[in-house]
Length: 128
Image 1: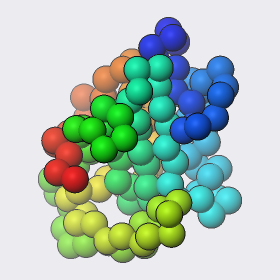
Image 2 (image 1 turned 45 degrees about the vertical axis):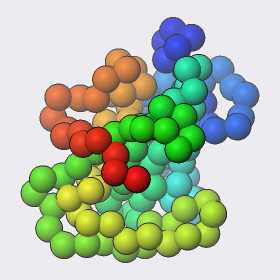
Image 3 (image 1 turned 180 degrees about the horizontal axis):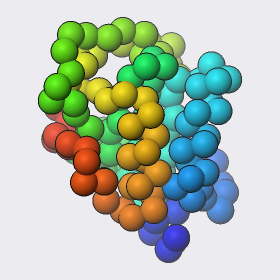
Image 4 (image 1 turned 135 degrees about the horizontal axis):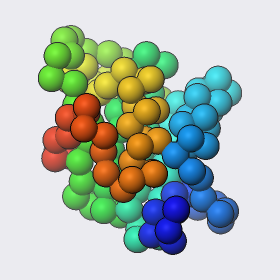
């Protein structure tokens, strides 16, 4: 991992997480009841994962409130609720705007290791 690829938890100084460590952290945080995880890198980018336990909204942003992108599931049907953010807000998202939680973990691992999404995920420009 180069300096630019180091991803840490938002606001916490650390040596950063490898992709496998980040993946494991997402699972552990869900086990602990923490549904939102925010990573930041040395360039000010934010990687957000918010899950309801089944699906996850994964977004990459160029800084807080900046433009970005998120993973999508073109085969997703319906909506899912229960996405609890650290602010206490509970959101509902279209299943097309989220991905299964295991896929989210795999995609985050790959992104942290390669600074690119894996080829088997689809990405859309963030609308928020």
